[in-house]
Structure formats: C-alpha cells, structure tokens
Image 1 (cartoon, helix red, strand yellow):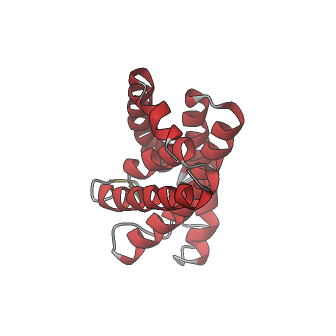
Image 2 (tube, one colour):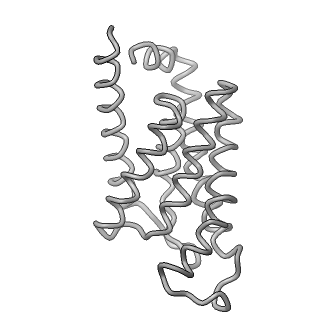
Length: 172
C-alpha cells in the first residue's frame, strides 16, 4: 500500500470518527454548568490508538466545531477534547500502553481541559472571575472523560483480545 492510499484511509477513518463524535454528543448530560459528552472522549482514545495524536487533535477540533454550530455543544468542548486527544496520542505513541493512554485522556481532558475552560469561559462566555472558580469545570470534565475512557477501554481491550485491533492498525 502506498502513502497516498494510507492517507486516504486515515482521512476517511478520521471523518467517520468526527461523525460518530457529533452524533454521539446527542447522548449528553448536564453536570453543573457543563454538558458532558462521553462519546467524544471515547473517540479521542480511538484516534490516539488508530490514527495518532495529530489526527486525534484534528478530529477533536472538527467535532467540537460541528457540535458548536449545531447547538450540541459549547465553546468549552474545545479545550477539553483537544487536550485529551493530544495527551492520549502522545502517550500511546511513546508507550503503546492502552491503560496509560486512557489515563492520559482523563488527565488531559479532566485536569488540563477543565482548567483551560476557566479563562475561556471568562473571555468568550462573559462570565466574571468572581462567578466561577478556576476548578469549576474540572469535576464535570472528569465525569465525562472517565465515562468515555471506560467505553474506549472496553472496546479497545475487546478488539485487542480478538486480534481485530492489530488488523485495524495493519491496514492503515
């Protein structure tokens, strides 16, 4: 398989994962002032394992943009999903360890994304610093990403035990 065919396959898979993330965000639930969409975090991890960190961040950005314009998400989806995708991709690339990749998604989204949402909420949403604490988004983001990470873990460990994960990665 040549490089051009490989790129077409990766872009196709990334497009499908964007669609799944957007459709999956219809299954969201409110936690505090945040809308939790665990499917996005599952997609972040799948991208990290199947496509790599750059595609993962790109998929997170595209899905967040589509969720924003369709009213399925808010501007706060950007820091959460993108930090998680980046860290999960870096950790999987360096270690190949699924469990550490799941933890990287949780830390990236829950901690870094939650803390990054604070200044974004002040700037874009017009919240005053006195209205929200800097850690306001950490708990909701953690709840969302833990749910999505569990879903991804179940899926990936099942795929790995059947040999399907190796086949998916081989055909890219």
